[in-house]
View 1: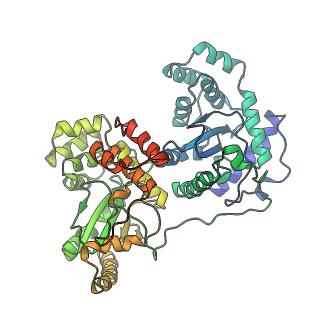
View 2 (view 1 turned 180 degrees about the horizontal axis):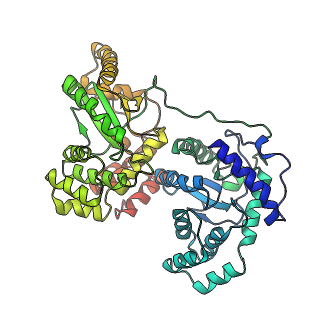
View 3 (view 1 turned 135 degrees about the horizontal axis):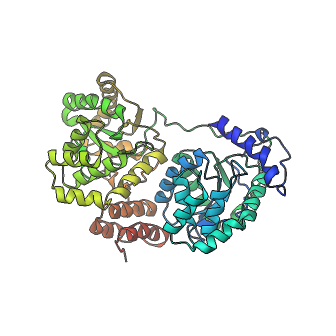
Length: 506
């Protein structure tokens, strides 16, 4: 990926002067400049289109191009980011063309922005990979209800080319050489990185923005004016197998085994993943060998690129709503690779579901947001593939055979028995191991167990996430109960999610 970004950067800087003659030339070779991930840069927002609240505590300025493959792929990550921080992020969209002779898509997006329809056009252009002709743009514009006379005039006269030139000039002056490049309140995130890279900086910047209570311009005013002269790389993040991570218990109906099990195995899985199918015999062996000492929790992580995995996950949540998750789960994996809508309905019938309720849930995509929130929680933690297991919060990546998994469970049991000898109740074991764990449960913190001997109140942001999770599951009573005493930004954040599904917290 680094090589691809470097090639893109060289292409941009080698050709940009030919088309945008008024843009300044870089003073240093692009390969010798880099952004320090710990520094703040004085990144201009310019007059580019933006979306999200203007007073949001987080402003993300991004240079991208609709024809950039990495820019297309990172849209999934950005969608997860918005879902994790509803109402708290503003995006400023700036252009750095891969091919300065082809700016039609960017000009079309700006023409749509002039009519107040930037975001729908932006999403459609990324959906087609940016390589689009004039006729296709006009077809999309009609579907979006744009004023076609005005749009054609803007494209014919190149009315928005000055904005693109300004974006390129600012990029070169700052030292941006490739796409996508993001700045979160001035903090750089180069390339199409994973969700963890974004959330790590967003969390830090929320603290800074709350402390300074300043707008974007003030937050970046003291930043560096341009990229540093020597490369400074942030080490790639990896989950540490010697650490324990915060790991909630997922969606209702997705666990098998008792609440007082000594070892909780959380399995992040994807119904379209062959390796997820491969790990099932090891999990079945663990249940048979350890009985009530083991609890298995299934959590959804439909991977990008698995076209049928998202709907299959939603179907499984619909089955769980009828108390039939595991019956449906077993049907899907027993018929691996068959994930059309008709296949899912066949599996539902075999699992003895109420088909009217099941079909209605799929028709209105009732569980889409719940699955997205599950996925975002995993990706933000650093889980980047399936299957991925956590044994009492300890990470175990990849598919493991029965013998290896049994060895890992035995090690956990040895550790747990020491706590039992110390007087900890079996029902408190998982709460105990989670009490010192790293990370954040971003989907539904209310699923984290508490010690029976001590009640620890959730923090406001955790309660807000729990309220949002209840709303995503269309559970207004639970949402209202969790929202009691919630105020300020935390309540507003939860209310945004709830209002989107028709639940009013007021």
